[in-house]
Image (cartoon, rainbow, N blue to C red; front, side, top):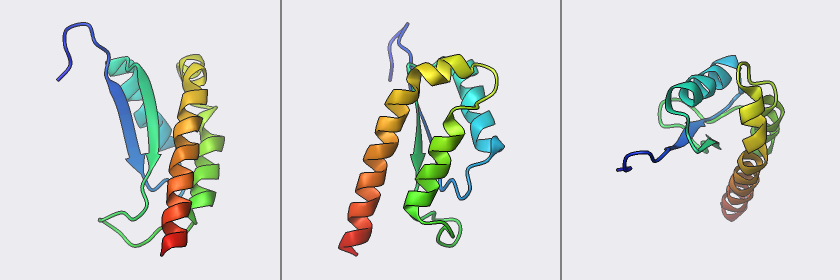
Length: 103
């Protein structure tokens, strides 16, 4: 639990297969409602509610990277945090690729 005055960390997970406006809109709505300290978009490897993604992990991460810039309403706030988000995406990509290589 967070104390009074603390800002939350927002995590938005999904397969992002493909990333679409709904993902970006949800991220923006969360940003507006909660004013999180940081927003992280986290690609899921294997969703429990559907079959495996049709796009590979590297392609889904590339789509996510391309989509981060044009978030409507508040794009400047998102862009200021883009470097941190991209670090998280790069870390997730590395872990997904390592897991895929391991079998």
